Length: 315
Image (cartoon, rainbow, N blue to C red; front, side):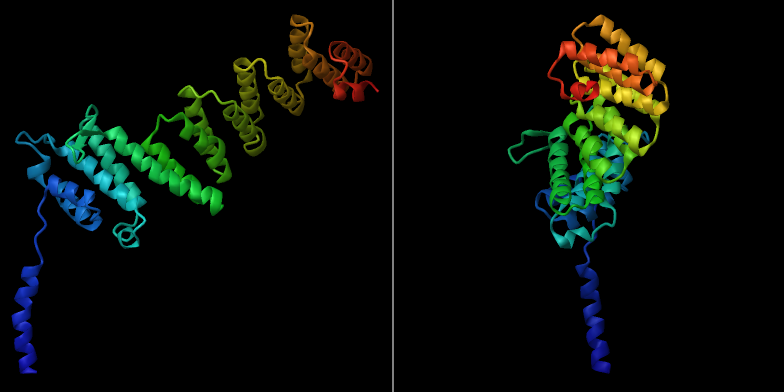
C-alpha cells in the first residue's frame, strides 16, 4: 500500500504538467482547422473569443481582430457540423446553432469585411468562397437524405443550412421552397422561401405553381390562392393553365359572376382565344345556363375544331 501511494505521489505532478494551458490565438486556431484537428481548433477558438486581450481594444470596443475571431469560430463549428469523422461529431451537440451565432456576431462587428483568411499561397480567400464550400457540404448531405434515404425532414433541415450559407442563391431558394419544404410538410417555411425566391428575381414558374397548391390544398386559403393565381396570370399571360387555376378558385369560392366577367373580357380582347371561350362554356354550365354554355363551346370550336374537351362538351 505504501509503495503504491508513493508511486502515485510521483505520477501526479507529471500528470498535472502534461495538461498544457490553452492560450488564445487566432492563428493557432486557424492552423488547427486547416490541419483537420477540429478538437484543437475548437478548444483554442473557445478560449480566444472569451479573451479580453484579443477581443476588446483599449477603449472597450471590439478589437480589429474580433470580427475575424468570431468568423473563424463559425467556420470551426460549421466544420464540426459537416465533418464525416465520427470522432469530431461529439465535440458539440448543436454545432450549427453555435456557428450561426458566431457568424452573426462577426457580421455585427464588421459587415464590410470580404476576407479574413489567406490560402496556402497567401492569396486572400473571400468569405463567400468559404461559405459556398460549406453550402456544398450541407447540400451533399441534403441531397443524399432526399434522394437515397427518403428522409425529407432531414433533407430540409440541411437544405435550410445551405440557404443560410448562400442566402441569395435563387436555385437553392427554389429547391428549399418548391421541393424540400413541402416534402417535409413545412408549408409555412415553403411559402417564405418561395416568396424570397420571387423577391430575388427567380423566374421558374414552379414557384408560383407550388405556392398556389400550398394555399389551395394545404392551407385551405382560397383568397391567397386566388391572389397567387392572379399574380401567375399577370407574370405569365401566355400560360393557359394559370387561367384554369384562377377559374378553379372562383368556382370553389362560388364567385362565378366574377369568373365570367374576366373570361368575357379575355374573349372580347382576343378573337382567337379558345381557352376563355371554353371556360365561359364551363362557367355558364355551372350557372345553370345550358344555352349560353353551348354557345360558348361552339364559339371555341370555331377557333379550334380539334380541341377534344370541346367536342365532348358539345356532343
